Image (cartoon, rainbow, N blue to C red; front, side, top):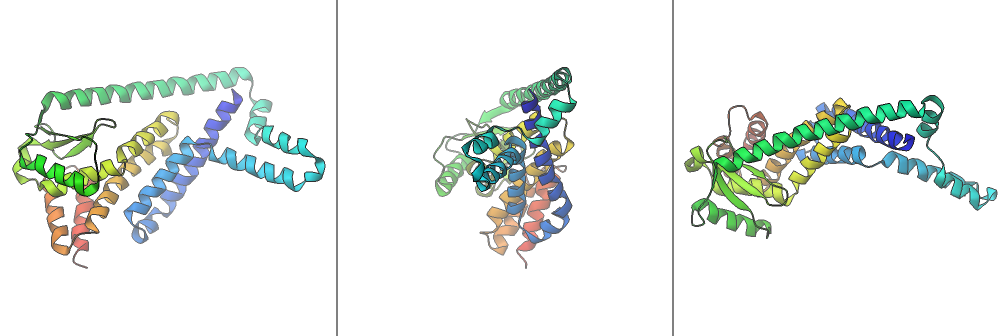
Length: 286
């Protein structure tokens, strides 16, 4: 039980260190490095939150130390592999089993509440989407562009194309059965090739899975504010890096058209994508 608590705390501390360094240097790094780099740093932070990397490193140092002192014999190496971490020892000395049980119970209840709330929100969201969505006809312009964009990006899995009267901008949903939703009210204003390429790029890069892992970080470390900041930061740089990938292969005129296409499908409050497309539209003039 103490080992479980120490592993969880070690992962939370390690992930927090990575996020803290990201926050500290982000005013500088975002001016120097591309959005893809920032997104990669976010994915690295997710790894530290979910995998006890620091414990593996600690075991490695113990093992190297045991090998260095090989004159003590093989049992030293075995002891190093079995030895408790410093935090394990500290918990055993200063926290009673009852206190550890209480702490783990609080963590478990918090994780369950967090998971239940987000599951409820997701189910309500998908239910509303399905209720207001209708399939795009296979002979429609958008469906034709979807097929050609999938071929260009090398995507062979089925992707449903729907239109929805309640949404303000295109989106892709579904981990196992991906579906692209287009806003019905603005179908005439959408540049289908650009918008569908953007959403399919998210699918090809498995961005939905990254966001799901970021949600898992929030679930396991619901008590850590930096875990929730990471979720928002990953979402931001996910969008920016996707726009960056597409804009990098465009001419000046195509970048302007891409910016106009996205802006035509955005709600006034969707500030993240507005910022990204305007940035790359301007970048085309340099």
